[in-house]
Amino acid sequence: MSQTVAAHRLGFMSAGVRREVQSERVRPAAASPLRAVDAAYGPAPGRDARTDLVLRADALGIPWEQILLEEIRAEEGLRRYLEDVEGEWPLGAALGILPSTFLRSWRVRNRLQNLSAQARAAQARSARSDLRRAFEQLGGKNEADRTTLAEHLWFAYQRILLLQRVSRAAAASRGGTPAERLAFICTRARCCYDDAAWAASAEDSPRPGHRLDAAIRKVREEGFQIPRAATEAGAFAALRRIVRASPALSRRRRSQKIPPNREGVPHRLPLSDDVG
Image (cartoon, rainbow, N blue to C red; front, side, top):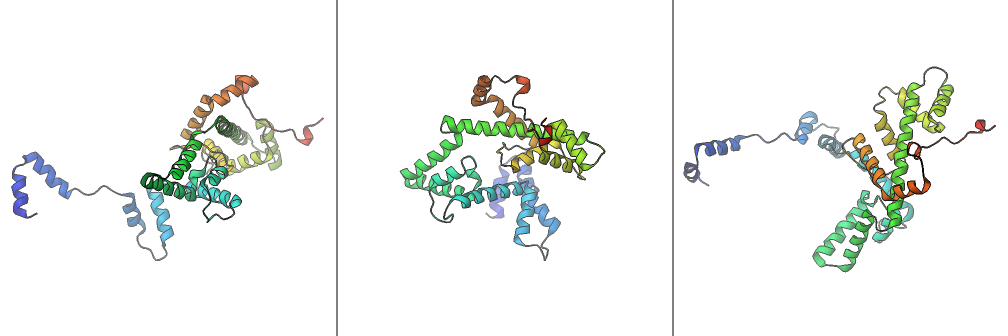
């Protein structure tokens, strides 16, 4: 567009609109986290493509460590049971190996994306059937699956409560030898030796952090599937809501008639010295 035509068009605009259009032309772009990364680090000689990816993920707030760890666990599960993980294995096999975490595998996500293209573009019935099976499994295709997941989340919730109790006992332990301190934690929190050692080590670290965050991280590392949220406190609140609202768990509580104040409290198994 020539300058004459542009000036002619601006002539029909009000003064306020003209000012807005002109200011829009010179308005600087919004600050980007990636620009901050480039400005801070720049093209350093020892900086490779992988380092650049990590820096960019950190700048954008992407939890790349968590995502990578989940991908590794999913890949290990597939390689443990699939004879040829690089082959054309059926989607149902991956759904059986990773019943509740198959979306954490890049191989499964690629397979779902290909099936989606087949179902939408070619209207393939087999692709639609596989997609329907996957999404039914995500939502709980039958009562047994829903109950199994509910109990899994219930155990995760109780495990977090136990580790928090162990952490409080570790904070209260003072003086004595390491063995005496661990014995105090086990007795007070009614936990096993490994949990007591974990809590004591976390309490003695230079930056112990929040006890709830540490407990949830440990429970995740143990393989429990805990909801994701912006903070671990939010994840714990979401987990508690699911556990309390689950019909399957409500039926089990009614059948067992567990008192509300004693509901599912984990207890330490008796040691050999406790007998007699």
